Each structure stands twice: as C-alpha cells, then as structure tokens.
Image (cartoon, rainbow over all chains, first blue to last red; front, side, top):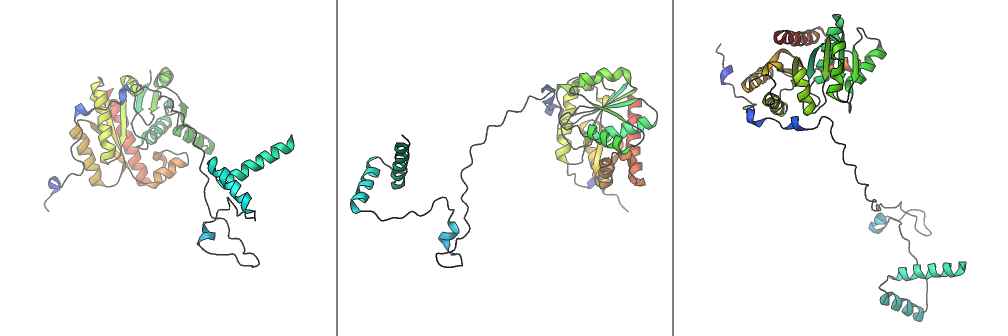
Length: 117
Length: 211
C-alpha cells in the first residue's frame, strides 16, 4: 500500500524563527508583588422583589407586576393633612429643591434634636 | 558537584513536575543521592506531592525541598549526585542562570501550537543568550496519537532542537498515580509504566551524551 505520509497536510505550520526569541529571560526571577487590588466599591443595593404580602383582609398574597417588583425598601406612608399644611410643605420642598419625603425626614430630625435638648 | 537537570517552561501544566518526580524516583531507586528543588514557591506542587508520598509511606523516599531562587537551590549541588530543578511556570533571569549551570535543560511540551510556539521561543532566547543547543531538549507530554507525536517531533526538529525519545500519553492513570504520591513510572498500568520508563531512560541517556 502506498505511503502518503509526506503528502499529509501539516496542522502546526512553521515554527517561530530564531529572531522571534522570547524576551522573558530579562524578567526578574522573583516576580514583583502583585498590585494590591483596590477595595471594591460598596455594592449598590440590590433590588430584589420582596415576598408577596397578603392583601389586607385576604389570605392569598397579591400577585401582579407591581407586587413582583416590590422590594420593600420603602413603604407607603399616607395621611390626611389640611390644604394649608400641604401647600406649606410643597413650598418648602420647591424652595429648597427637596423631595416631600426629604422635608419630612428633616422635620423629624429637627423634632428629635429639639426634644433631646 | 551533582549532575544538574532542569525542567523549565513558561507555561504551567506541561509536565515539569511530572518528569522531575519520575526522574527523581528512578534515580532514588537506583541508589543515587538525589534531590528535587521545587522552585515554584507559589504553587509548591512537588512539595505537596512529596508530603503525600511520605504520608503514604511510598518507597523509595524521594527528597524534595522548596527554594525561592535558583541560586539558593544550586548551593546544594555539592551535597547530591543528582540535583533536579523543577522550575516555576514562568521563565526569567533565573532560567538563564539555571541553564548556564545545568547539564541538561528539559522543556516539556504538549502537542498543540499554543504549547509549541512559546516553547520554541523560550529555547531561542536561551540560545541567543549563549546556551548551547546540545544542552536543550524537549520532552513530549500529553500526546494523543502516534500521528500527533510524529508531527510534533517534525515541528521541533524544524525549529532546530532535539526531542527525547518516547513520550507520555494523555492518560488519567498518570494523574491518578501522582495524586496518590506515586511517580508516573509507578503507575499500575504496565503499558503506561513502560512508556514512562522509556522516556526517563531517554532523558538519562541524553545527559550521558552531553556529559
């Protein structure tokens, strides 16, 4: 049987020529210590959906798009106020470029601070 | 002064420690005073293997010690008949220092172009630095088929270097043997043991040629 070994296609190609010598022999024997990794930035709070809560007066949890997205980082806070109080809070928020909730938070801080004095 | 045989490579996993252990085991079995200097302090795989071997009570006992630099290890040369340098998975000024004093520098390689091209470049660098080609040789490891072995040999010859006769095949039995603290020449599979024996004998013969 004929021997076709010499006609077989080489898969490795040609080896690197001598002028392609590695430059690694210039490297220090003991590698320099690795650059210490920077402390990772504090992770952003992960928003994961909270377990579905039962609806008021019902046993089964409510299942819809909004409840699936709910993270329970915040909760609903509703109350009834006078129109004048509502107007005043909104004016303060607009003047100081705050959210309504930030006005409430600062008010609470001021109240607690005054109470401690 | 001991005969010094070094296993070097820029890459990890090519078989430096595998061959260093097998050579040391065979030398110890022949009554030579031999030591493996593990120069890879970051991984220390041969030191771990040595500990496993000691714990398992495997004879003959093979001495192994970790060293941070080649020069530290070479200080031992007067105390042994054979000093085996198991290099780290990188090449550096230390590799050149090893090559200058070693009787034989063995670079194990697999059969892929990804293994072979950088391996050839490393030997080119040693030759450029004045190391005689006669001191440098390749050893084939993790070979799959006879055709693959033949093509790898042809490639290395074309680059101008020698390759040891024989090779280690890609076989789990070799890994299993080493996991248990044995050398590849101590595997229980007769055919694989014979292949490993032949490769180590080729290595010893090569040292004889050069010396």
